[in-house]
Length: 125
Image 1: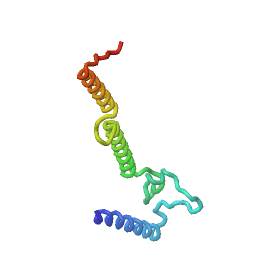
Image 2: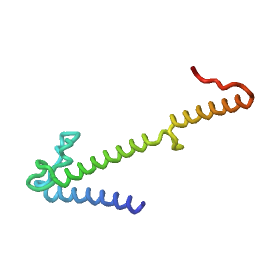
Image 3: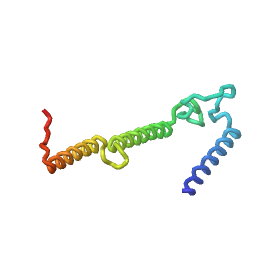
């Protein structure tokens, strides 16, 4: 687990360093964020970062990664919702079934104890 965490952190640091080197050595071919704007646009996440079309064309690999991420997120949420719906309580027995079983057991035990005492069984009209 720590190995994966160190790989993720290390690759983030190296990627940031590479971007700094590229923007200082070849600033004309790197898409830069405007200095006066506080926040960038969301489309900047998907655009090409360097070259003649930097900041103007959508990078196909970035777009595919975004689509795959959204689809995986939706699949995860759908599975989580299905799992929660399948189990009504942590014990695994649906509540309505458990309540019906308890009511039926209570009714049967009342009937059995009444019959043993000689009390006639009462039926609803």
